[in-house]
Length: 202
Image (tube, rainbow, N blue to C red; front, top):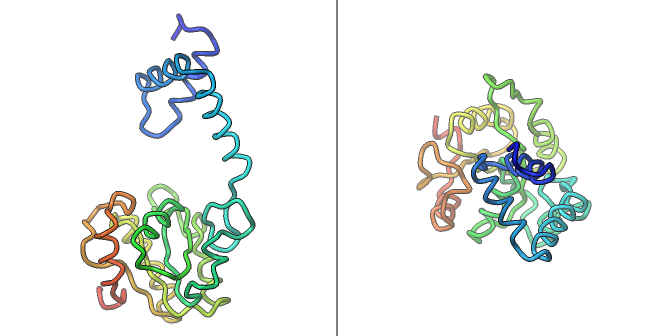
């Protein structure tokens, strides 16, 4: 990097902070940005800046939105007694594409991982339990990854919520160890329709 101008070196280092972007990919992207029409690069920069300035988390479900409450939480046509628990806001987009679910959501923001120091206090489990009580939720659907962390989180949530509400999880078609956002809409739709009570699966 010693032969690059300082501004270019800073750009490459910044691009390397993006997921899956290594040094070589960062260099290719940096040169692409420099060699593209100026308007294209500026538009990208403005889009990033605008997202950081205007996107916030919904005060109710923690989905991404530009208002106090997201469009899903504001939709009176959705079932207010069902909550689908996901890890990240992008999982909501994936599930909405199935058109199989018409309830609310709750974004945990992570999965339990004691080895990494991620306990219940590091994700939004307390907020979920409070919502279940406050909103008189009748069913909680766990739409979590079928990984070790997802399984551990599902079990913990069942123990917290099982005595209060029906706790179900996505069923058939999801591969073990798979991530929700890599699963196609048809498979996810079948999993939603075929969800089972968590206590029936232990």
